[in-house]
Length: 230
View 1: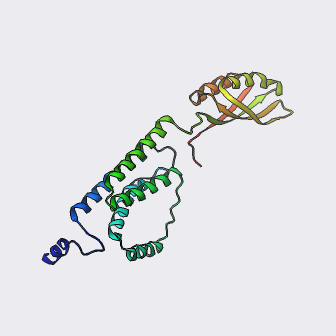
View 2: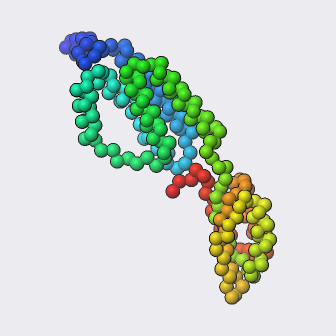
View 3: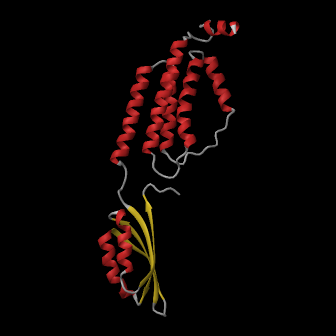
C-alpha cells in the first residue's frame, strides 16, 4: 500500500505535468457533459433504432477519450502508439440513424476538450449542442408534416363506382395517386391508391367513411409516418 501511495503521489511521472485534482475534475466534467448529451438523445430520439447500449456508449466514450487525451499529453510517441493500438480493434456496429453519428463526434470532441483541460470551451460546446438538438426536436425541422399511406379495397361494379371515392379521398388527402385497378367480369374490382394525408390523425375517419360507401369491402390501409424505419 505504501508503494502504491508513493506512486500515486509522485505526480510528474508521465509525459506531462499530472495533477490528481485536475484529472478528477476532467473526468467529472466529461461524465456530466456526456450524461447531458445522453439525456438529450433519449428525449429527442424518434424511430425504431433506440439502443440502451448506444446511450451508455455516449457517456463511456466521452470519458474514455478524456482519459486518452490526458495519457497522450504532448507526447507524439504515445499518440502514435495509441493509434496503433486502436487500429487492432475492429468496430462492426452499424449506425442505423444518421443522427447517432453526431453524438459519436460530440463524445469524441468533448472528451478531447476535457482531457486537454479546455473546460470553458467544452461546457460552451456541450450547451450549444444540446440547445441545438432541442430546437430541432421542438421545431420539427426538416419534417414534411405528412403521412404516406397505401389504400387497397374491393369494389363492386365498374370503374364508374370510383367517382364518390375520389371525392372522399380529396377531402382527406393532399394528393391521391391511383396505383392499380382491376375489374373482373363478375363485377368485382380491386383498387389500390397511394395517399398523402392532410392530417394523419384522421386516417381512421377516412376508412370509416370509405366503408360506408356502397359496394366497398375488404379495406386495407397502411400508414407510414415520416420517421418510420425499414
